[in-house]
Length: 298
Image 1 (cartoon, rainbow, N blue to C red):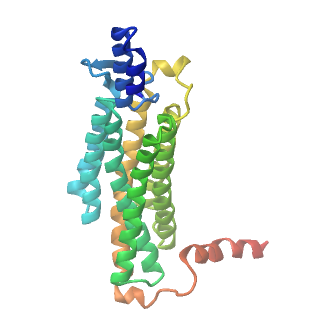
Image 2 (image 1 turned 60 degrees about the vertical axis):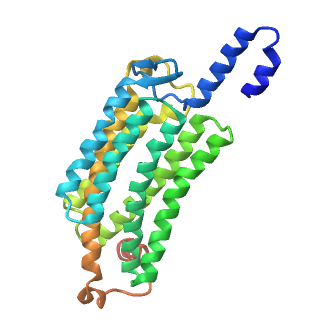
Image 3 (image 1 turned 180 degrees about the vertical axis):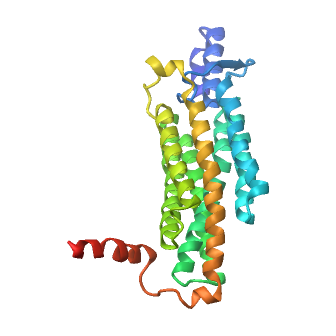
């Protein structure tokens, strides 16, 4: 694009042409959506990039969410999740401190890794419940988790390369990442309910995680629906509130991951394995146990 602009206007107005080319180059560097709505935005030198002050500083919430898991979680996968959540904080800061397109990829990459860890353990729980163990089952869940995280990053990049609007790219990424989190949440809910621990701390962790992510989604809807950054939204750093609420969800998900991992280990023990019901999946058994009896009792 810049080459065509340069060849067209260089003869008539070289200085104006250079300004146009420079503006186009700056625009190509930035990831442009409405994350900065209500934030204090500072230029980053003469690069054309921008520093979103509150959004960048609020990224520390993810480090605060992940760091306690590193030394408080009991299982290696939950501690790894906590470490990667600190990476989410660094990636989020890197993006909002520059608003660069490359920074956006750095932002979503560690988030995709945390989602992969949750998907890995969620699939593991379903496999153990179905009696699928061994290296083949482990390979399957690795492939599923890796594929999910890869495409969650690759598809947004491909859309950006194809010239799709950045708001649409953000929306597609949010849908994919949210879907992975929702799958993990549903699996955890079913397993906790089936094992009779939903009314304890695991159930409370799930409730807090769901409530906070919904609140955060309300605060960030303007990021992928253009035209909403107006009126009262311009007075509040809404994306920073998304950081606050989603970091609480991330922290709770770390503890849910820890609990689910320990529960799966218990389910894999030989004494429990021989008691396992075969045939129907966990969801089907729950439906038969909790929905069908109530229908017939009417």
